Structure formats: C-alpha cells, structure tokens
Length: 83
Length: 461
Image (cartoon, rainbow over all chains, first blue to last red; front, side, top):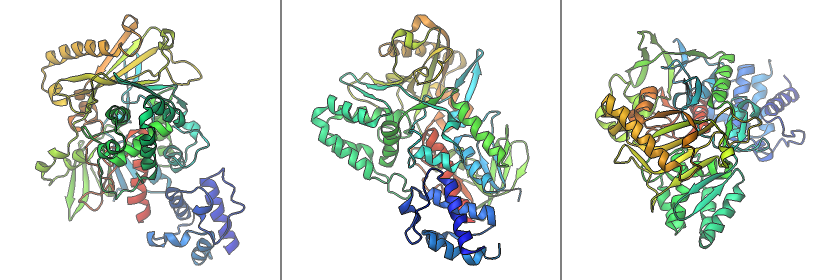
C-alpha cells in the first residue's frame, strides 16, 4: 500500500467508528483526538481494526506514535507496504 | 488450549466482554450456570406473566446526538445502534422526604433549578458540588478511594439535602453501608441526574436479546447450564477450569463476572478466612404488583419515587427483615412508550437483611413474606395512589431468592463494597469484570466488561 492508501484506510476506519463526524478537514500533524470526538476506547478500536483486517500488531507502548494521522501513516508504512 | 478467553457468567458484563473479544477474532466461550442469561439483570415468567429481575430503569440515558457519554460509548464499542436498545425516556421521578420533595427528569437543568428552589440557601454550595463532580475523573482505575459523605457533606451544609442527593444514588448502585466511594458517587450522580432514566418497552430482555444475538453473530460460544465447579491453579495462573458436569476447559485467560468473593471461592487453593470482610451486605426485597388498571388512570404519572420516612436517610443492612422507612417505588408504565404496557404495575424495593431471611424455616419464611408484603404496601400507598383494590397478581423476592438465583454471597446485588477497579487478581491470567470491578447498573456492567476485555486481552496481544 502507498502512503495515500494507508491514510485512506485509517480515515475509513475512523469513519466507521464515528460515522457522523466530518473527517475531510483532519490535519495530519495534530493529534486526531484533538480534532474529532474520539475517546481512548475508540482509539483502541482503530488499532484493533488494523489487526483484524491486516494482521498488524501494534504493541501497547507504540500507541502514542499513532496519535496523529501523519504519525500513523509513517508508523504503518513499513508494516503495510507489502499488502 | 480450548479457548483464548473463558468468561464466567452471561450477564451484562460477560456478554459485553464476549462481544468485544469475539468481534476481534478471539476464540471465546462464556459459561453460564443458569438456563437463562442476564445474571443480576435477568427475567422470569410467573403466572403467565414476564417479569424483569432487577431492572427498574436503565440509567445513563442521553439523546442520540450526544457522543461522549457512557451509553453512546458502549454502543460504539459493541457496534450497536441506539435504536437496538429501543430505550424510551422516563417522565418524572421524585425524591420524597418528610421535609422536602425534589423532582428530576432527563433534563439536568430542571433538577438543578428544583434543588435551588427547594434549598435556596444551598444554591452556592450545590453549584460548588457540581464543579467538584465535573472536575473529578471517575474513570481513573488507579484513584485512591475517597468518602463521598465527607466530600458532599463538607460542601453542602444542609444534611437533608445531602441525604436526598444520596438516596437515589445509593439505592441504584451502592454496595457500601452508610457511605459511598466518591468515584462511585460521581458515576451514579452523572448517570441518574445529569443523564437520566429510560427503559425498553420489552424490559431487560430487549437488551439481553441484542447482546446474545451480537455475541453469537461474531462467533462467540455460549454454554448454558454450565456451572464452574473450581479453578485449578498452578504457578500463579489458572491452569484449567473444572465444570460441574466434569468437563475441563483450558483457556489462556479467564474473565469472571461471578463476583470477587464468589470467584475466589472457586479457587482450589484459596484461604477463605480473609474473604468474609469483603462480602457485601446490601440486599433488598422487591414486591411486584400487577394491577387491573393503569397508574395513569389513577392520576399517577411519576416514573420512580425514592422515599424516606425518617428524620435521616439510613442506607444499611437493617436489623429487622425489611426496612420500610425508605424505599423505591417504580412504575414501569410511566415511561414515554409509543404504546402503553398491557397491564399496570408497581415495583417496590426496600433494604433487607439476608441473614434474618436465611435463617427462617420454610413456613416462617412464607409467613414473614406475607406479613412484610402488607407492611410494604401500607408504606408505599403513602406515596402513590392507593392501588390495593386493583391488585390482580403479586410476586415478591427476598435476599434469599436473589442468592439462590445469582449465587451472590448474602444476596448482595451490588456485590462487595471493595471494588477491584483494575480487574486484576493475584493470579496472572484471572480478571474480574462486572459488579465487583466497580461500574454498576446495566450500562456500567456492560462498560465494565468492555473495559476489562480491552485492558487485559485486546491491548495485551
């Protein structure tokens, strides 16, 4: 997957968790949770959904690296490039 | 290994945990002792009628556009839609004391104004209490327990107002006698006063049916009439689970919703001597009256009445079989249903003493039930229209009944006063969820199952 594809996967997963939130203006460098109403349980679901769909394991200690959209893409790129 | 996770108990918390785990592909099994799901929030049939066990009202009701509150949170976590629970909001509830009456509905501003109208000298103090409540992080699993009596009574100087605030919060979810942990107070305050009451027209079955269907759809396994006999431990872990039917199940992790004391008693090598102090003492009798006319036709539109008849409100195990000086009167008809319920009904709940009920002989037990039913009725009709000539059916359950059907020590519906908020036990792979983890009520129980499944299983693998 390319960076753009990874980004749209993440947005799609967030959209599934909070369907009535507008994600089109989400900024890449600001923590996602500061821009949309997403609590820690919802955040966990993003990570769980990545595992469910693509078998990606994100250790608990790495969760902070996925706080922003840019951070998530950078973190996931090596794990998803061959998908 | 037979399963990645074995869950003990198919109540609200066990089913919610199961849905989370099954959805994310865990091999999970729930074992339930009864032939019916629900645990402390189950249902039964009697005299051709269906009754809910515990449910008066579901707390935490918010309208569909609110997102960051416990109810929408749990719906998202369980991949459910708000309409799945088919919740209908309450009409009006009251707290009735000899000195004052407070009213509340699902509009928090209404309650705040009613408190200030009734206690004008406490207006500033009440606002101060609200700030303390809203600033407190009640979901912090590592917070030190604080006495709610101390916090509330040091803020509000009128003891009657203190008691009136505590009354519904204690009746609907407090395992501790006389006091309440402040975090629990905040949870209950928000769930009852800031959010509110609602009920599915079909009662608790609506919720349970949705949960069971969802759990099975995600591939979860549910074994009914399957009691756990003991947990076999070695090297600080649960090695296997022995069922009453002789079957042995191995699971990487065990999540128990049976209660803390109740779970420890399943351990093959546990020292029981220290357990007694953990056992809860708060239990209730409940009388259910079916009527041949609707309470509304009697001019009664209140959903729930919390009453207290004495100078102060005492929430504790009574020194007699039942304490009728305070209680809760629920009218299941008085929710905003699109179609009225087929029959009128009142449910009256009072504090009761398990030990005293338990030591009665069979004939004494029957006689005492009949006598207390009259006493409870006599007290209840001081607060609601006298419905005694309209009763067509009565059912009554005692702490002994609760203990028999739920296996809770002392019939303590709210479990141990000491909550295990992190869900951890002294065994590496055994965790507690549900009532004794500390989130109470139907919504609380489901959130407990969800949080513990997240914390101890999903985040760890």
